[in-house]
Length: 248
Length: 317
Image 1 (cartoon, rainbow over the protein chains, first blue to last red):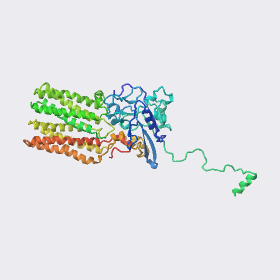
Image 2: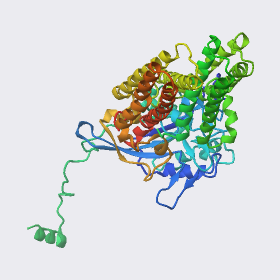
Image 3: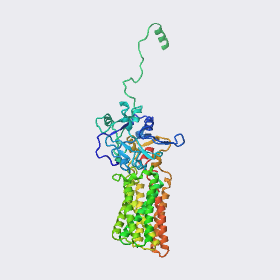
């Protein structure tokens, strides 16, 4: 059913993406592609992969922006994926019931077996989270790696989305944003996590952590401002004589 | 937004077809349709044929047309599903009304009720079509109060022109139809101009700064795109080919869709003899390419918030 669930669990699984830490390496995008090429949404079709104009389905895209406020240029890497919104219009516009939001954890999914490929859901998403598979004729999107996070065949520490598992700088965090005491909820509070395009009213679950204020001075580590001689004691004997000779 | 030909043809043809069905229903219920089986058969078959062709055309852009029947299921939440249901329901009263008029030569009693229901169902279907676009918040050019009046008035205009052409062709004069056709052209023109004025003048609520949340760092500019070639998002939502011709195309839409039909309708209303059906036919015939151009612009000029992530602004081309 594409109506939103009436009774939702308080569980709101999602991601927190730290824009201060992301180095723009695209590992999350690549590992997402790798995992999901064999997962529930497989295949993530690539058309003309070795030709001039390759065209493929990806659930995760890493943009890089530059900002020029108060005289300081800054470069911010910005991974963009499904935000698993609380008010996902991509679900309610679906005419067939293929798109749905899970009552038990809030994950937004597509049932590819009944999707007619009308593309209306992708029009309804302000964030560009959904990508149409021209080859399969159905819409595809991030599943929050539903086939990893509940997968008992994986070690407990691997039951996180592929993008989170692979991030070399831990810029991506996974957890329950509906639980105010969860680690990622605390992280969002501490770092002032925010919604993308709040004016759209989609109430995204995923949160972004802003880049920290830029430091313009060296860190105060307690080091002296200049180097002093290692020792004022002068050596005696032959070495002392050489030292005095060379110091002249 | 990518102007898919199937959707442009679908919304234009269905608009005209439902406009014609609505007006036939109203004139029939008012007892103003002549019991002329030829006029009835051609009018009903044309209206239903055009609507059916439009509906079939709309399935051409689906990835899985064979699953299209599933689109009837989610009318509780989806305007696209509601449109599907409304278009299917409309066949009931319109076919019944047509049968009463053409086969039994009657538009009174039960058939008049069918006529009123035809009108209501046809109008409802056009409203559902318009609301598919009206309800999409990421597209400011669609998510505004001018879209539904535009679709309704253009449907009424093209429907009235075709009814006038058919009536004139079969030598009938329906009371008040000429002034109605002229009035709907003026109304549709005013609403279209108001729509264009609105989309040209209103600032977009979303910006690259709100899309990324990085506005506190200053102006946000795309430094590096996530991919080197186009993807689905840019093909579908980032369409901008030939948008530079928008101004000229608006003039073409105005001339073909409104000015020429108005002049021809005016000529038909004041002339007599064989010139009348010719003028009405040309008016109805030229309005369709005009509305097709208008509908192409409706898609091609609409910008989607996802393009903000790709370094574009909603306010600029």
